[in-house]
Length: 362
Image 1 (cartoon, one colour):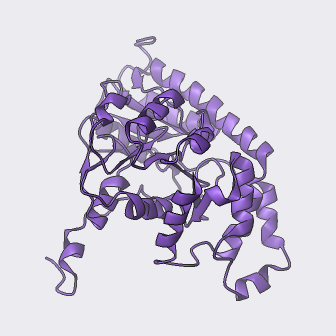
Image 2 (tube, rainbow, N blue to C red):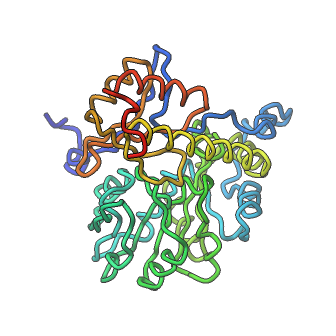
């Protein structure tokens, strides 16, 4: 029953449903693609800064100048090509409002980040969803024709598939007068960033986050990279909504985290090595595993329904992500945890699945 105080638009919204964050019972969380390792010690040391209490007493820098400078150095761009927000979801929201509210439909894949249609509904944006190929790869030719713009996670979620940079360029060339947003939440786990193309393409916006690769999901810090005219557009929207989205702690801690290149390389390498080992082990357990360049794998058990495996794993105290959606309802998305957590997952699957391991190499 609709609340009489709600506006008609609010009553029609279908909000995004995030992955479960359990309370009470201790579970192995492999359902929300969080980094399994602690954040950089260099970042955590900023919490002991004696100047922090004074910084908290005052409003933060609305332009996040030091943070933008650190991001620019890390990404090989100029500070004026950086925009920061309260998590990449806020950056995405501002991008949808700033660039995609047009007469033509916004284009994104039929299997992708499920927040995109929510933003479209919130801002009244028409959209169309070209179908991924049977192997879950993107066919760039499907994105030709009139469009308000394109948004594409790369690597895609929840598939983990990545589109090579030459194909990203083709996409940019298809829509020279519209923004093509490349959502790179998982790019540090093995892919090549489209940031290298920014100076050549005025329609390219790259959106990234510190939640996954930098183990700062609880901090809520994301950013966008693009030519200054796109950054100005995001700033106009941000300053019409909230002039101070990044608090003083997040600015200081985020700048320290993103400057710790050694930590990033070491932890990302560990996640990628574990991902390869787990994918092979899942193959041996007769799963179909989609090739992934993210910190998760999408896998289909052949001997039991994905929903039953999901429920059985929960009984063993292990959370993975199950999507009851077309084309992926028989798959599980499994975040890459520590080696110990993944060993617990594999041990549980050997107990759950019928004749586990008897179909090796299939």
